[in-house]
Length: 116
Image (tube, rainbow, N blue to C red):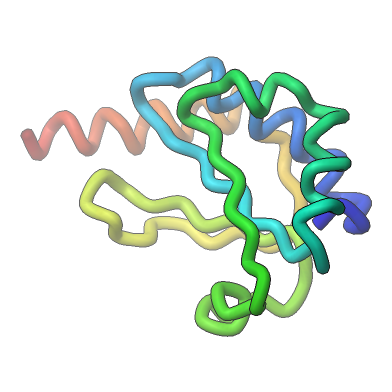
């Protein structure tokens, strides 16, 4: 949400993560904003999000996703494997472009390749 300080802070790192791993991951940022105009104004501050093919913004206009996933505070992140199985649920903002993050995604991707 554009009004969520930690969400705004981690948003550029999510874009960077998507840009670093364009063929390996997809990022879906779900917005809890009240209107589409709020989202559009927010995105203007992050032009790279519009030109990153594996970065998508979804507007949860009726908050049904938030309810279905039991999200009670923002930000929350969910990581899914290639089989769409949730492998990690994270409460709060995290540094997405870090050595720990690179190691985690590298490990997750190597496990996926082993199954192929």
